[in-house]
Length: 439
Length: 179
Image 1 (cartoon, helix red, strand yellow):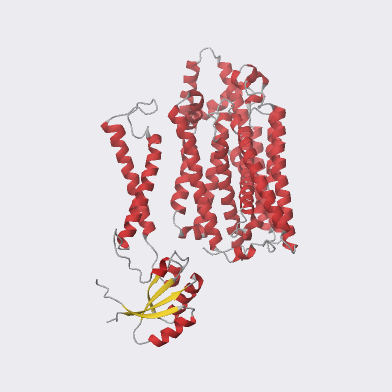
Image 2 (cartoon, chains in turn blue, purple; image 1 turned 180 degrees about the vertical axis):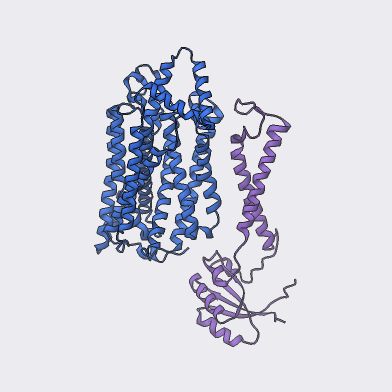
């Protein structure tokens, strides 16, 4: 039985408090008027910041090109971007940690449906991580609902004024409308969390059971969940991320988001397993289990890169204006996070985890894992920020605050859940195979 | 000088074979070779074989393939006959690099795979029409064979091998190794 130490509890609470302060700072310093917004950006440009001068040049060029646009119009756009900024910082972090729990749930369901023999020793760790899915998804839902009530302009298609001037969005109104959007979100979240609830229930009941009926039920609902998941996950990625930029579309976007959440989930399982093992729990987990998680981290990182590149190359090659703007914005305004992410999510894990022996050494898994997780945070950042705040991005107090807040909440919920039940799934029919697992 | 006489012990189960290899090595007998119809998991560790270095070679071969693909595509598509790629006639390798990534990947895999197989053949001294070294055709079907070198402990070995579950133990006069 794992006990949630006071040290870790206090640490998570401190993270939440610091994160909350950071987020509040972000929300309180939002400009109220166009003049304030312009002066804020101008102030930032007075520094000898290299990007500052680039922005200035960019603005001037934009102004020169659009003479029919009045200065006010431009200023209003800037104001909206700056007002979006703390919301986007909140949303990126909320989504990222929800995505970890969801990716872990998918990994767990695959292990259940495949009746995997190696993994039952870490089922309780996975179940602990998926406990964050319900609170995490509800936070995301609240942010989406607040967007629907026009507290922010993250989703421009929610603004009837924008839609009435935009023929492309008008064509999508039957799908992109606020009631439909929120109902769909409830269906996704309801489906995922009810699978999680029942699977956890059967998993715990199996520990006491004399037969394997609970295991069989878990197998069946896991297979059904995977079908539900891959459809709703795809639609979720269109709804919650792709629609932030309602003109742009990519047909493999759902897969791309899936690979990102899957590798983040597996990495988190590995990190928490190593932590618990370091604290003296999970004595049945051996280095072959860590090796297998390391293989998944390595493999899915390459799978992510494959999808990232498939999406990039087709759009780059065909060079169709309405598609290619997506990558032009990212390469011009987000150069460092865009290419830095490729290094963190592909080249670093590729080189570090290629050697078979390194996947058994906790130090390497932890090092690669931290870089992969931060890399996928930046991946979500790159998906959401460019359409929400344009070139006004910065990883500042609000962004770090958002990350820390949800990180603290994540630690609190996950370790609380792990401490509730015995950490060893002693009744699982495959637990013996998992204990003897040896590569 | 080692004699050319060896013992051939035949087994009909891979688990028995594995435990036999372990107990033979515990008694400090020298196992010359093991012939199996399929790769037996963990046999290399039980026999105490050195770890393979083919993965290091695979990495090096992959790097060679990667470099060859870059030089090749640079010569073909940029230098020798400059191509307008995707409506972007920049004639620079770097700016057209995304178009070459699939080729870079394929050449890396191609070089690593083919050179690895060739290395394996050379290292194992295999070539077309080579006569099989396999001493007993049963080991290509469902039997496992351990070849043990011995000096003057034939009886002791025979007893040990019977104990480990060998279905047949034979002493064979081997032809010279130099042949």
